[in-house]
Length: 158
Image (cartoon, rainbow, N blue to C red):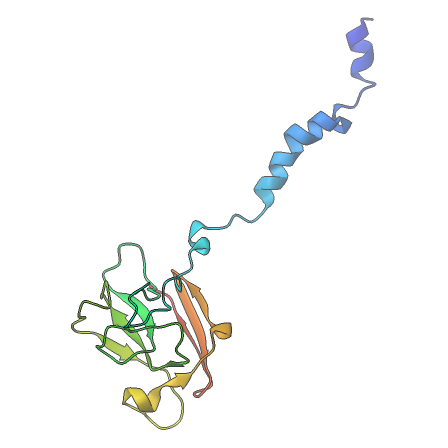
């Protein structure tokens, strides 16, 4: 009986550190939950804008890639361009928009607002307090708790 044949049955290759490193480790890496690249995007980045100091000038646009229209929470007055600013603490609607910048007008926009109780139509009457602690903001999803109406709003494009 040859030397190789004699040791073949005595040595268990599955207990080898090299086997564990090169064959089992990759499977454990693939078994982990993969994070989508969009989960690394922060749509609130650049929203701490002020009219007198033009910086950021962005808003959280919740949309599909290459979408023509976006949904965004609106903290500013309809039509003034500064539709969402991070320092605001009240939301007065959720706007459908295709406005690329606060310096450009947005035509044909509209906003909806989930509310409870009596119907409130004007922006100032229907607005609700919110906290960034209750916001979940992803490029494909937005959720926030509206305290004055006791409603959690969720937006996802289709």
